[in-house]
Amino acid sequence: MDKTTVIVVSVCVVLLGANLYYAKQNQQVRLAQQSAAQAQPAPAAPESPAAPAPTPAHRPPLTPAKPADAQLEPAAETLLPESNLAPEQLLTLENDFFRVIATTHGGGIKRVELKKHRLTGDQPVVLNRAAPLPVFNIAGWTANANLIGYQVADHDAVSVTFTRELQPGITLTRKFTISDDYSLALEQTVTNATAEIKVLPPYRLSLGTVTALRPENGTAEERYVTLSWYTTAGSYGGGQLGQFSDFAPLGFKLWSGKQLIDSGDAAIRWATVKSQFFAMIVDCHGFDARQVTGARQYFPELRAEPNTAVPTGIVGDLAISGLTVNPHTSVAQQFSLYAGPKENSRLQLLPDDQARVMEFGWFGIISRALLWLMNYIHDFVPNYGVAIVCVTIILRAILWWPQSAANRSMKRMQAVAPLMKEMQEKFKGKPEKLNPEMLKIYKEYGVNPVGGCLPMLIQFPIFIGFYGMLQSSIELRHEHFLWIKDLSQPDTVFRLALGGAFSLPLNPMPLIMTATMYLSMRITPQPQGVDNPMVKMMRFMPLFFLLFCYNFSSALSLYWTAQNILSIIQMRYNLKQVAPTLEAMKAQAQARKKRLHKR
Image (tube, rainbow, N blue to C red; front, top):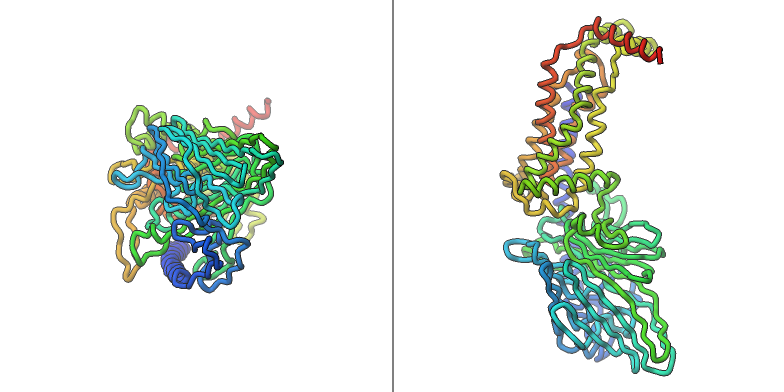
């Protein structure tokens, strides 16, 4: 191992250790700030017997959370439950896919239980859990209250209707109807029974709350907690939970986190709050919303242990324009809600390009193709780990010819290495003379110095496509393979205690991936004695891949490990071919030159 290698490896190890250290420090600081914020006395509520202080179940929804030492600006309005809120009634709508719990407190969706997806054991995944407000809650049509009571007008297995008198002669009716999958429709009607024109002000519609499914996993899951939106102009945007936190790499604060996430003034078609594998998408039908807003919310009730960091999430809402209702008429608005898994094939069937919530990235077309191929193979092979290996074999078969050509190119480079070495010694310290001579050798013997890099350039988009697919595709969640318990998570077998609160997870698959990468590189022909910067850079690729993949989905490491093993098999096959001689290479180059001249 040369001096450069030692330096690079040492720097990577130091950076990894510093990252672990400061991650733990930031978590302790965050816990201290949250504890101080909770211990700080809450501001007194306005003195009014009709306005009780908010309870934990009725928190103000969009008050930006700040550490205890931060200065909070006074809120524009105090949003409280209405004073005459009757006891809550919960009503269930149910099909084969989910169980929707509607509530008279807010006349919306309190939570959604997904029957086909489990959190742990027999416990179902619950969307909008621990939320301060139900999905579709309206704020702005009742003075000094954001959570108002409704009456149940009708209820059956698939629909429920709520009513509420907003003011004398003005009635709000909300009918929720579930479909036969993960979708739900809301028909919201305002009826004016008076002889006057009534104007209702703009209001905010709750999108719900999203948190990490397993908050004890920390930032590994929180980085996927997102508020996103899609504009009428076809633009997709959003913000992540991490944007509320200060950016302090290695302990040095560069900028402060956001207090609110908002979409600006663009007209909104739909908006979503989502985690890594699940989403709630609210779509407006026949009209546009004005703005999406989201704030961070703390959820101490979701803590796994009393002394751990308080889980956080995003509470989002949608600004809707006001309504004008003529005498003795009604005005209706239509909404839909998708509350379920981020399955690309299912989301593709939804209107208004709602499949954008998958966020496959720049190589989305590759991600979707790989996902389709993996699912197609899984129809015949009932194990996603085996399906990933089969996908890798198919891709390797497609790339067999260009990889073989690259291997031949590397052998040709190895053949001319003595000539290159001779030129380097002859023109040492004279690059202006060395470079033309090297190009002359390449041309004379028909050698392409970058020919061996072509397969890597082809494989890179595939690797990024796999990465984008694995970030949010639910198919691999809870899928087993060999010792791997969940292909969507790192394959941690145990944690190595480093002293104090520090520990290092042992993830075998990325280590196997790194070992196979080194083995593949060792048997790859390399020109001896030639100063090739590309070769030096590629020497550190396995280490970079290890750092990149170590705490990511084990399925990605599995794919790259299988790819490395197949590459080793192909390389050993190609190495058995007879190496070209300089005379043969020169004759081939001249023959190729004559053919091109005739054209």
